[in-house]
Length: 467
Figure 1: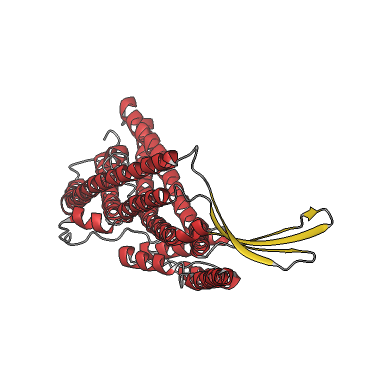
Figure 2: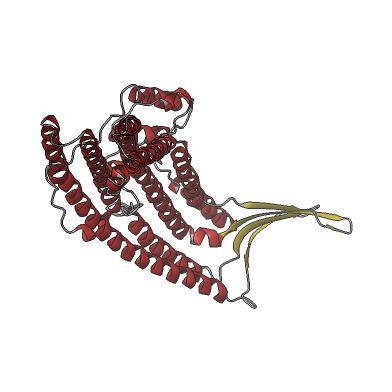
């Protein structure tokens, strides 16, 4: 009988070892989700050769002015924080592998002496409790691994979205600083002309002070715009993971043009709930805690259940072979506390999942409304405000040539036109930021841009300053 038990135990160990499987690739599923949901590709650098290949691809991309998508590709290749996040997949994979394998057996040797007789006892023990719940443990760790993959995919998509937004902000800030430099030049010329006319007695002190005040304000606005452009560029540089000579990256001078029409996007909330990774993670998290609850209920009396083989020999006697079974007696702890804790974790996970779904629907609605509004505002600037400012400027130029208005009126009109164009740049930037937010809201939690603080529409008053 002992031989049969030993054979059965050996067979279980062999079968358990063969049943342990390892995913073919820990990054493949993340790459697939990133490609299908965000249209981006990500690579993990596992060794020096991978790192050198990535550096060569980054150098190739940086050799040309970066557009939004090439900037995203550089970030996904070169951002070391993302590479550290990808390493979490290896940790989760190792934990899954560990949970899939049978626990090691234990061997005990004792040598008790009774008078002149020396006895030697060998025993081999194996945890039956761990063996019985092994399928549950494996499914739990598989769910944890899948959740880790979704969390890493969310990090990938979030980095892609934030990089796009940083690129739009950097390009728009540089373009805005360039226009405000024109405003400052016009204000400087106006102030110098006012000074000369005041010295000639053709200008009073009030008129000269107004021109100098505008010049001073334009100088401050330019300094703020240049600082904003520098900050935006540095934020983009950080996301791209660049340093040294790489920071001299080239960006285009202008933002992409607005689309002719916005595509129809229907049933956004339902679509988002079926594909948002944070919603799926919360849902599977609740299911995993449910399985943990079932596991706890199953093992509440099986904390210690060991099967063992023993072999006892003594001097002058034949060997005795047998088996032993040890089990923990639930006299003081019936496992209620473990079940209560597991049930609390389960209810917590269920409520977290419900909260995530509610927030997701709200974020999609907010992102969609901001997307539509930003497009309407940007198109209004493009089709109405900027053409009107140009028409007014052309009419004033004709009147100046006909000596119907003076040079100061012409300069003031030029400043107004430049300020309108600057505000149009801000509106165009806001649309692309809203577009990135909506795309992110469909696949994960977005970092919604507050257009009340971006300052696009406020640029008119800042640049036009009192004239």
